[in-house]
Image 1 (cartoon, rainbow, N blue to C red):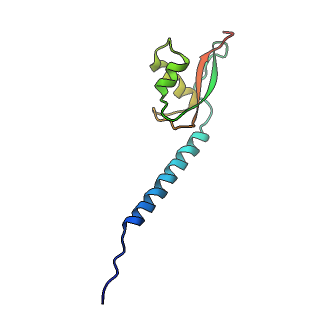
Image 2: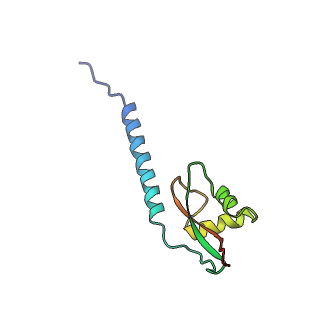
Image 3: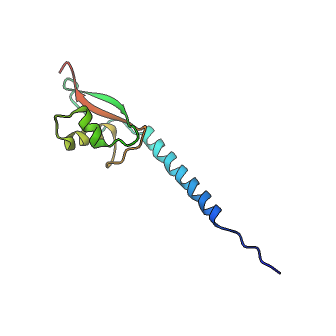
Length: 105
């Protein structure tokens, strides 16, 4: 009697797709549920600008865009602290808070 052989490749592809979807869903949920800013900025000197990360953007690039005359390392750190971002990983369409100088300050 001939034994049936099941091709496992479609199962592996399906499992990979499901795992990737669940990972991305978890990352989006974590971004949405980020807590209050971990660092307070003097209200008279800074305001927190809401920035939606676009595909391909980095924290470094965002820092240079909003505060081009300052050390990007310092600004990246402040964005991470204000947004509750750990490490340098940000996702497209994630909301980050960028401390910018207040017009009145």
